[in-house]
Image (cartoon, rainbow, N blue to C red; front, side, top):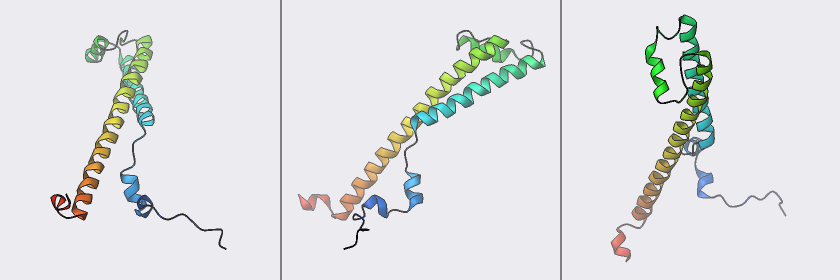
Amino acid sequence: MNLDTQPANTSAEQLPEPVLLAFAPVHRLGMGMASGVVFGGGLFLMTVALLLRGGYPIGPTLGLLGHFFFGYTVTWPGALVGLAWGFLAGFIIGYGFALTHNVAVWLWLVVVKSRAEMDQYGDFLDHM
């Protein structure tokens, strides 16, 4: 008796690994965190760079973000506020993108599978 028997292969196990990775879902929390770090860090670094170059008179357009991000100004405390707001905005955008991507891929795979099943049986109306 062979104890190393494996269960029967399912259709998902028969696909090559690159195909499975191509249709793998995007991790929503991971994408949100990564986007939040990039957006928040980017806004923080832009504010700090502007402050080191001379402050608000050089770049008044960055100060316009204060209309959208409550408490943000082109100052040192404003850079920290921008870090927090940038992280929040980036998280929401990244999470929403991952969610939309996963739903779109899932719907596309459902349509492809449905068409493949209909093609397998020929004309659908002939089997009714």
